[in-house]
Amino acid sequence: MTKITVTYAPDKNFVPLTLVSMASVLKNARKGDEIEFVIMYSDLEDKYLQTFDNLQAIKNYSLKSIKVDEKIFDGFPCPNWVTIEAWFRCLLADLLPDEDKVLYLDCDTIVQASLSELFKLDLGDNLAGVIEDVSGSKEKAQNIALTDGFYFNSGVMLINLKAWRKQDFFTKLKNIVMTDAKVSNDQDALNKACDGFKYRLSPKYDYMHVWWRKNTPDYDDKYMAEFIKAQENPVIVHFTGKKPNHPACKNKFLPEFREYAKLVPAYETLQKEIGVKEAGKGREKLPFYKRIFSIEISSDRKHKYINIFGLTLKIKI
Ligand SMILES: [Mn+2]
Image 1 (tube, rainbow, N blue to C red):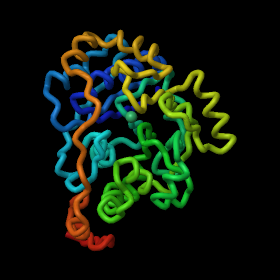
Image 2: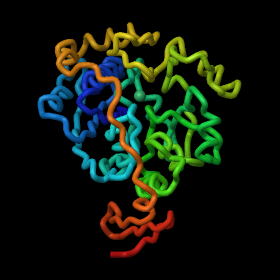
Image 3: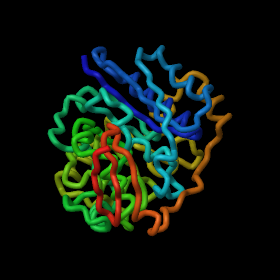
């Protein structure tokens, strides 16, 4: 038996894609894979929450839906291509106190093989298993001054919750968001907070077909060879750019996506009802003077953190 916990954080627009991703996980699971899905959400109506339980015919699984308070992320920036829900995974150590390892997947993914191999990986003290971003990794790493030299794509993360708890991960990340002017979205923040504590996974676990871009990845030779090998039959496909429910999507794995969509009851009706939205409104980072001072309570409720000018004081309550 391998326990496989996969978490998503959809808003309403991403419900259809999330269902397809879940269907693909179930379809390709091995017999001994024990699948659990965790849906983090903020304001999804019940009728959409219920759809996440509609896939039991493919393979049995357990389901947890966790409502997250958006207020926790007051002051966190959101460019218009990501949702506020994108920040929710940063809280996973608190949301799932009994889990030690979970896979976070963006809703715009499909999984084409069992995830048991991935879950058997020992991450050691690393905070996450991650895949180097397919474009501009070195430049982005420099921009936010990463010490370990590569910037990962945060759409797929094998998260070591044990290590997150040890490092008080959310407090660490929040401090970065509030004080580092270069950090402008969830992916930057996760990269910065995991700096020096990441396990580099094969590109086959987050295959990005950047069909609308002419550039090639700045991977080293070994990673590039793995990327080329991965493009034939990746374990996880990540539909960056136009989503597979958008008529202009030209991703090479679109036929596979459509096959998995057929496994989702009433997919077409649901997709029609929700529609395809391209971008959100976006949210600016709080002005600096509001970011330099804050007080918060630790997740174990035993300490108070006072953040002043990027310094954190930990005080017993
Ligand atoms: Mn994505």
